[in-house]
Each structure stands twice: as C-alpha cells, then as structure tokens.
Image (cartoon, rainbow, N blue to C red):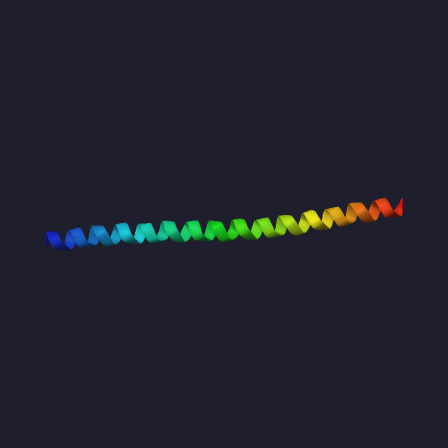
Length: 56
C-alpha cells in the first residue's frame, strides 16, 4: 500500500512541476507578444511625430 502512496505523491509532484513549466512558457509567450506590440506602438508613435513635424 505504501508503494501506491509514494507513486501518487511522485505523480502529484510531477504534475505540479509540469504546471509550473506550462505557466512559465505562457508567461514567456505573453512577454514576447507584449514586446512586439510595444515595438509596433513605438514605431507608430515615431512615424506620427515625424509626420506632424513635417506638417508644421
């Protein structure tokens, strides 16, 4: 009976570790997407500033 308990505890640990890895992967993807959006907004802002300077 103790063997099953050890296996259950080990499975629980492995599932938790997998969940943590999954969360880190999601955070990394989200961070990359945010960086891309930030860069697009920065370029748009720069283009708008240049355009506005040209109109003055």
